[in-house]
Length: 309
Image (cartoon, rainbow, N blue to C red):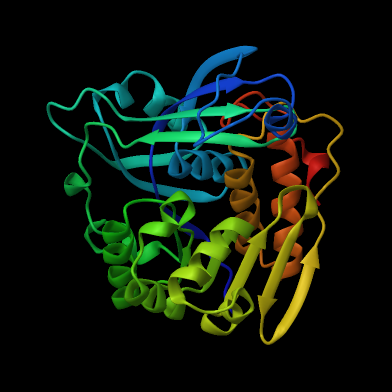
């Protein structure tokens, strides 16, 4: 990217997370007890609720890092019960979070984590409908936006936002996440072809390839920059006809992995906004993700100045 992005638009979900902790290993549990059709009974060691949603998590991280960030999302009335103020205090512009009338409940995400960072996730989109959302082109400050992040949401919404951004000439990150299996071949070819960056974990990349009916290795040829996150094994990059690997930062103790991928994205975008090349920006993403792994919730971590370089 010739000119570093200075103002970021984050399009993504807001949710209230219910985080449960299973003490031990899911893998060991499956070895010891027969698990059929995901029918398992897990003893829970700890439980808490917190602010979440990919859009909120990424915007929070960018706010901590001092990046000018506008959040485009929708929520229920309960967003006003502290969540808006929390993001505002982190430095996030929440003026364009649409509150659906007569919709008291925002999205809910229930996540069970084990001691090794593995997770089982259930997501309820909430009472608030995406029809209340504005398109990026309708935002008064859209002319100031240099880069947009399209976080995991309903495919029709992501495709509509991508088309709008394309018409505006604003580069975007395509990050389908847990919605990846719901996209059509046509939408994926279009989104991959126009995205400046495509981000996903190994499983999400395999689903992309399966939907497109191509080998996973062919995905790199369909987009400008392909970023495959591999948790403790770091990040694989494919861009300009080359393959690069960035190792993850060592973390002695994983308190909770929830939101660490969103923290990675915040660090990555922070690096890009400061004129770093892709490898340097990815390293910054890994450093911020390591900070998040040491916290209990997706939006309570801090980033000491010495933690990023």
